[in-house]
Length: 176
Image (cartoon, rainbow, N blue to C red; front, side, top):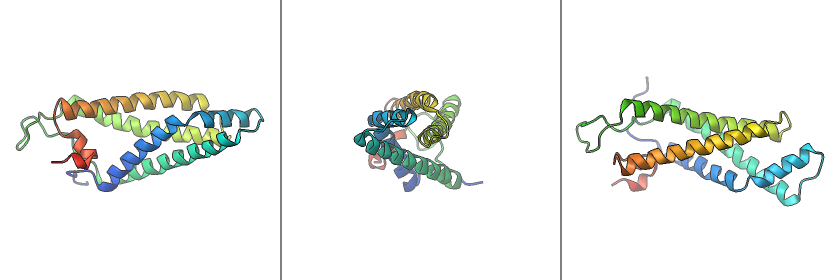
């Protein structure tokens, strides 16, 4: 069994922020791919600007896929740091992560990975004309947004209310 690391590896942190940035690009520029897929499905020709931006969307989707797979590999190979230390653990000032909160965090991370992979798979199958999963892709988009909002809210809560240093794990510049 791999020992629990004290911190995320630099590659894990970089990949986290690559996925974050790529998701925002996808959300900001999703209309051209919708119009392009609709044009292709109805036998039309997509507008040239839409087609170009659709390929950008596909490229960022591929980036997300590769980054998520790399993150999962690194996580399986090197692990991830434990949650904040237990209540009144030696050398800590913040209370530890309650067991239920730790379980929720674990399942939240699993749900994020699953939603990201499902988004890429449904998007890829739709883009390549294998299956029209646009509605499933749209639903997963809503789910992913909710998961990311909850993930960010939990990180901010832990950092600023519980004061357990959560954000320092993924933003090394915050370390004292």
